[in-house]
Image (cartoon, rainbow, N blue to C red):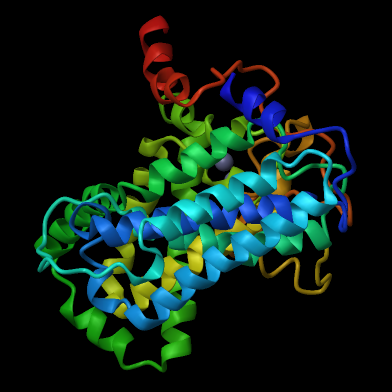
Length: 376
Ligand SMILES: [Zn+2]
Ligand SMILES: [Zn+2]
């Protein structure tokens, strides 16, 4: 397995706490790869950057960010190489940073006029990865629910591939979801309702949007569990044996498209594009957070707002919580429909699927729902 080789190549038996050169090495390699990817984007903007994002980039700031990431990779790489016996992490970061600098670094000019058309959203993938890592990794390292769980737990690389697979072709997935939904809403008409909702204060509109979306998501999610032909797709999301923020991105494409696409239909009846966009941003962050390996909670708020512990119970393989906790924002929706399971203060002991062997690799999982079909 590739993951085994990666772990073997970069890992060693030395301790991984602060001050051992482990974190500086990991960050150096991460920053180095980001910097290299960003400079490659500057060289091939037509092919690699998302047409939707291009007009919105503050390029001076982006170039400063790229410069900062290059310098960060080198400094952290040196620190790691000094502190750690095995130098490969730090050297990897420095090598990528050096490569980025040799390719012209942050100063590469964009000379060609850019036009719309097919593009691989590498820029979006890199930015998203950086942002998500900056938000979620520190809280998992500082306040984990499961302190023994490593960032590089088994199958971590598989989940990075899932993150890549949903974020790289973002245009294709967005078109697959948005186009049918808008078409349907255009057919059915909704101006009166939209006008009424639009006259409410923005926070009220936003709260209503989260509520409508979660009610829709509840029933779509429940159908994914209760209808056997849909479960085959959703089983992939439940195959994670340990949860953290990146495990949340493991989902079959059909699962993703169904949830996002069907949830958008009731949203489009009532809410403006700006509210929907704000909601999509919110759900990305809240749903990712619900999967994090993050222990702290606000006890009185837990029954009203989903905290990681609530969604972790949705992922357990323990019998008492199977097919429970479908909501992704408001736990009381589950209470309302009789699928609420939330024991005081406890976290599950086991995750994943006990009675359903899921193939280990990305492609095996992509075809898994269809092979089950044939066998049935
Ligand atoms: Zn589920
Ligand atoms: Zn989940």
